[in-house]
Length: 138
Image (cartoon, rainbow, N blue to C red; front, top):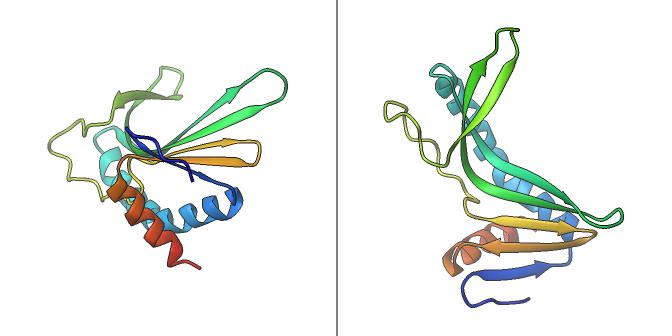
């Protein structure tokens, strides 16, 4: 375990196990998000709970970043009938929309490179809360 002063960092070696447990924790939330997006879609919005970015480095090495949070998109229809997703931010774009469900992993960033996983937690409190949920899944 590695601890940084500004943000809590924890490197986890059991990458597949850690990610599987995160997926279990987020599973119920995803169902709530699907239902919430049915409402948001009526106003032309979509709430994405996880953003995944891939960075290719020299050679064949890829690093995947999973950003857990609330990422809002506007759905636009093109003249040819296609759909265009336009990122509009992390704040709810329309005050008339109900508040989205609480994200159990909001603020967590997971970096995967080869078989090494590094999880960056937004706070000590968040670290304790998520690790408690993961330990209860054993």
